[in-house]
Length: 90
Image (cartoon, rainbow, N blue to C red):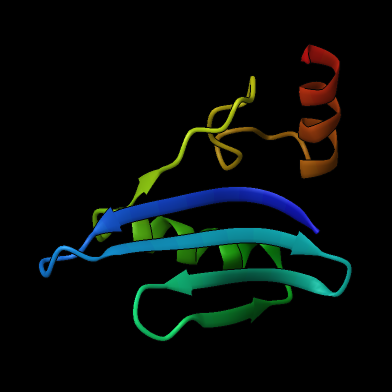
């Protein structure tokens, strides 16, 4: 499983909601929430990207990881190549 991005925000009630966007061998997943954890599965990275974009529009913010690529959706490189570049930079 490869982590693509993590988003977080604080709800109006003061709870922290965090969503993880990952690539697995059998598809793409988004999971998270703050009350009942949810899991959403997608067959394509484009569908996962659409959900990511929606969450950003709801006020979620990207959790920065120690990576030379700050936002995986901004790059035109495939995720595999982004991760290889990240390993080279370490």
